Image (cartoon, rainbow, N blue to C red; front, top):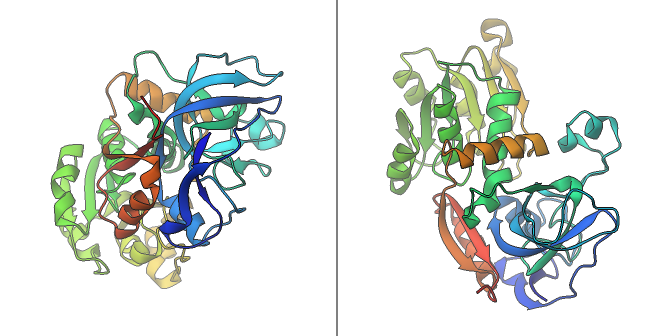
Length: 349
């Protein structure tokens, strides 16, 4: 088969579209013919060596495709099923966390595309049956590939971590990117008032179309807390989705309202944010800081239901052949991407 292979860490040019050995399914795995794979900042960080990865690798964890082979123990999927991956190659399925439906916390989970030559930037990929969900027949677009990471993680953050309530105010940082635009849609669907923060004038229209009530446009690195407090009449935001990380964390903390919740979702630089106890002001505001890590199968199924009903729409602004994966990563590193980038095998069609 053909695949994008990175032999070592380095710049985007370390990735090449080349021949690779097709995967053979383990007893609990399905081999999936890749229709499309999302390009995510996670892969950029692994490629740079800023997140753990076992090289050489085939990157990619956001896959939609068709099952073409099943392992001997697979019972819930059959050849011909259209499926979407849930970010991980496998979870153990046996630990306390997996049994309680919290497989994102599985201590033995393997993230798809981080380990060895099995990832979504390829014609074929092998994924365990515990990390696949069938795509409803009403969803035909390849954009469904990004359902788990770009949309499901935001569902997790808003609904299950922040416990967003009807009528609350939500701040979405990095609002014009591949996760932020979906967070806006989900927050609006939950009855929230949405304040969206972006550093790019070119992304303002997309942020507005996604449903933001207020848009805070500031230059990169500038403290935007006063702007957010101004549009909320000094009250602040009940929920803050921090999609950027250390670069905007200090500003975000200042915008959290009394008894509010800040949820760490993304980190574009892998630099741990510093928490200033005086800034957090525990005794004065009683705020909480939590994090949301990826998506469970149940959450992914909920996202697919929302997509099928038209409640949330995947935002994909670029579709590139997999041989142009280096270009996709350059776009991601520049911060210029509005929405998500999809990669499709060069041999598709």
